Image (tube, rainbow, N blue to C red; front, top):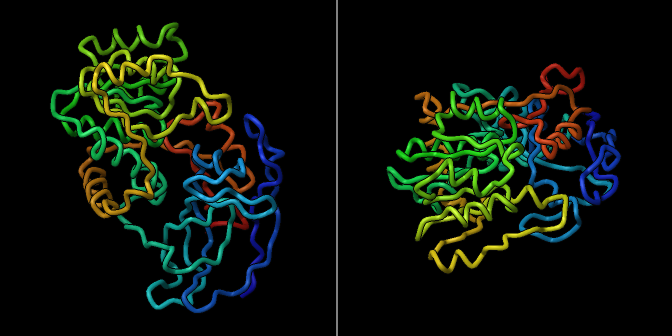
Amino acid sequence: MTVVARQFHLKARPEGLPASDNFELVKRSLASPHTGQVLVRNRWLSVDPYMRGRMTGRESYMPPFELGEPLDGAAIGVVIESEDTDLRPGDVVSHFAGWRDYAVIDATSATKIDPAIPEQAYLGPLGFPGFAAYIGVLRIGKPQSGETVFVSAAAGSVGSLAVQIAKIKGCRVVASAGSEEKLRWLRDEAGVDAAINYKEAEDMAAALDAAAPEGIDVYFDNVGGTHLEAALNAANDFARFALCGMIDQYNSEPSGPRNIYAAIEKSILLQGFITIHNMSVWEDFQRDVTRWILEGEVKWQDTVLHGLENTPAAFLDLFAGKNSGKMVIDLRDDPQGGS
């Protein structure tokens, strides 16, 4: 079976904010799968902020994207053709050959998903964004019941699960986000105790002090910059900071924090982490979050764009703050994509 796949390639490396002309949609004929491989037709694609770092050409914890080659990322697809003993046509799987409508992949890189869970959840709360929240809150933050947890970019795919895990653990949760609509969801659906609109806060440190008058014990950082400075200022002695991302610096020169000495004065633990360094707890994460979803303790929201051609636009919208929850691309109605 010969399939012509549409794939997005990296055409030029971004300088500052990415733009649509950094990407190129091309067509490639795919060979039939060999032994141990499957052909998948993608139904859902994920775009995530970390992908920006892979576009620089700089070596990091994941290899950089190559110019003129397909981009990749998390995806959900249906098996069309299989040369594997465990996967059959019709199986719906999660895998990492995103930014395209069809792909031939090794069966060992595909995982069947639970049909009781909405498919796109495996790109958000049950995907690597959710895994990042799980690791940062539970392995680094280690919140105790009654403590105060602050989460920045709390309406995104990572932050929105982080706040809910903290609530499950009995904590008081303070969240920041960039619109009243996002804050409303965080209060009404995720159950946070206090919410800050950072775009309207003239002084982030003062806003956090008002929201957490007794200080914070755990900070889950997705932003860096003034958020990190404010958290250092508000931290109680022996606070734990889980440094997950710094979206404030992805497309601009690094800034701050200017008060890092507070980490010494207050004996604060600041620990960065990478999901792939924590795979030993992946099964625990899948078990716990699946249970929380089925029991109604975890909610999530998706921002959905339709059609493969809108994948770059979805990625660019991340840096404009246009997403609430997980940004995903729905290919199910795409005439050349999902079924």
